[in-house]
Length: 154
Image (cartoon, rainbow, N blue to C red; front, side):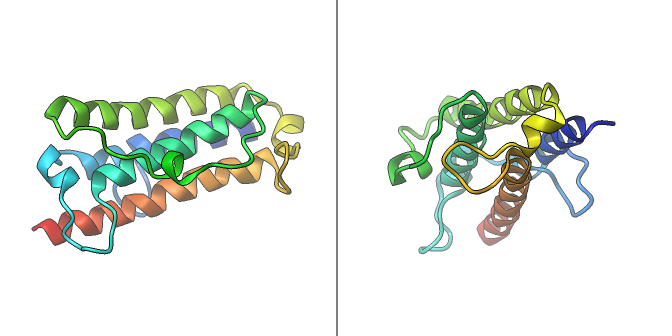
C-alpha cells in the first residue's frame, strides 16, 4: 500500500475507526444530544460542539492547503467557530460536516504521490506528510477531550 493510501486510510479511521487506542470520533460522538454537545460541564473547557467545529476547521484548512491555498494565518473566529444555533438539526449538520471534511481530505490524499507528500506546505517549514499526520493526531487528541466531557456530563 502506498504512503498516500495509508494516510488516507488513517484519516478515515480517525472518524470511523477502528482505532487501536479506543473510539474514533464518530464512535465517541454517537448518542451525544445537542444539549450535551452545547453543555459546558467544565467552565474553562470548550463544549463538545465547539470541539467538533474546531476539528472540522483543521480538516478543511489542510485540504485547502493541498489545493494550493497557502492558508498561513487562521484567526480565532475560524479556529474556534461560534456555534450559531443549538437546534437538533444544526448539531447533526455539524457532525456530518466534520465527517464529510475528513472523508473529502482522505479522498484527496489518496490521489497524492510520494513527491507531493514530501513537498513543503507553501509558507510553512513542514511537509504535506507531516501536516497530514498532524490532522490525524489532532482529531484523535480532541476525541479524547470529547470522551472526557461526555464522562463529566454523566
